Image (tube, rainbow, N blue to C red; front, side, top):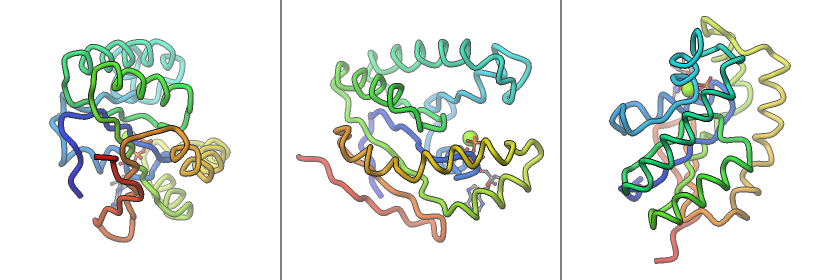
Length: 167
Ligand code: ATP
Ligand code: MG
């Protein structure tokens, strides 16, 4: 799957869907702006939820600064908050960059399995709420006006584009 570059790339998927794993071999570390990593910088660690507001403040600053410079920016958060998604989309549009979503469409049971195998699992009710939100997200994404929504299937490393840019 060929994604535009430079571009804004917003990762979307529940915890354990494989967002960070998908991005790591495809982008330089500096291109990936991760809310977990920023919680580790402004807070006590990637899982310091009390640091979320500060981490997202820094994240928005970095994303906007990179996009203004026309730099590829991969937003590595859950991507499940429509308000945040639309703000990133608007920033990409303002910068004249293509705006892409990569949807990690991992089966719910696989997300739960991976989550429970992790050192610091997300509490089951929190993951259940994320998975519930993720169920509706594809329909929302299609209405939001992204240049491309690319779904990544878990069963293989193949990527299936579900919408193509107008060009
Ligand atoms: P979070 O939202 O919590 O950051 P994430 O979506 O970034 O989660 P990852 O950290 O990428 O998820 O992956 C979670 C776990 O699943 C890791 O242990 C990773 O090794 C494993 N994993 C990710 N992608 C795959 C894959 N395609 N095949 C097998 N295992 C995978
Ligand atoms: Mg991650």
